[in-house]
Image (cartoon, rainbow, N blue to C red):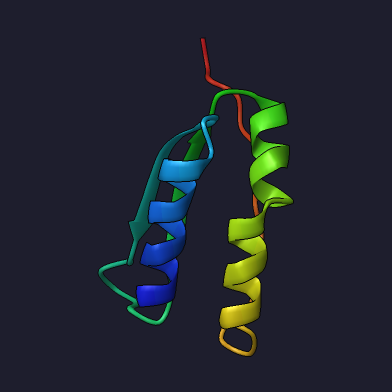
Length: 77
């Protein structure tokens, strides 16, 4: 969790297109972590996903992450 919280702080500080970043732990399963992120646009997400902070997290958390997946969403009207 400290590695993830440090990643969150870096993203919010260094990535102007990262608008919102929350770390969630399901009440019924504390072995999972969910991350809710909002980006200014697709380009900002691409900067984040390929940027130095996530690369650092992947290196530091090697062997700790069992499943990593993301879903791009659009706001519903």
